[in-house]
Amino acid sequence: MASIRDVVQELGQREGVETAVVLGRDGLPIDSFSQNGLDADGIAALVPSLVGACDRLGQAGTRGDFTATVIEYGNGFAIVSIINAETLFAVFVRPDTNVGSILHELNKYRTAIAGLL
Image 1 (cartoon, helix red, strand yellow):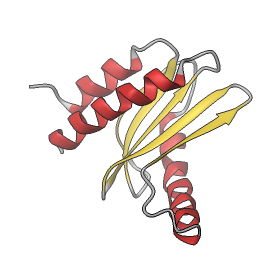
Image 2 (cartoon, rainbow, N blue to C red; image 1 turned 90 degrees about the horizontal axis):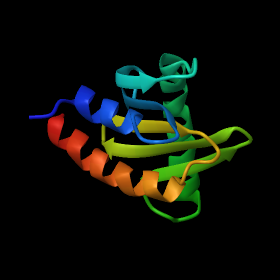
Image 3 (cartoon, rainbow, N blue to C red; image 1 turned 90 degrees about the vertical axis):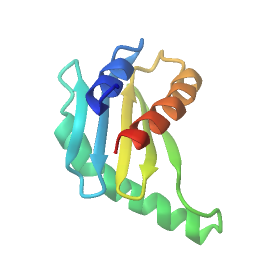
């Protein structure tokens, strides 16, 4: 049976992925993969406040509960997804990465990680 580490490492090996972090709502990483000097712990610490803001925005706009977001930056994309009530998933990718395929794969990984928790 695969572990959370196996799943995170597998996603980390995808073309364009620089960081993948499974973390708790408290901002503490559960497991991570990182390359190119990205600080997975620092990223994990910031994700819960982003998710909180997204939750509030969705409620204010009557969109329902937050499930995922893609944020575009000058040097790539950040993808943040809910795994379950206590666990989040953040993935940072290079700007030339096919974000659609990463989102598709993220759904598979989200289900696999949720099953391991």
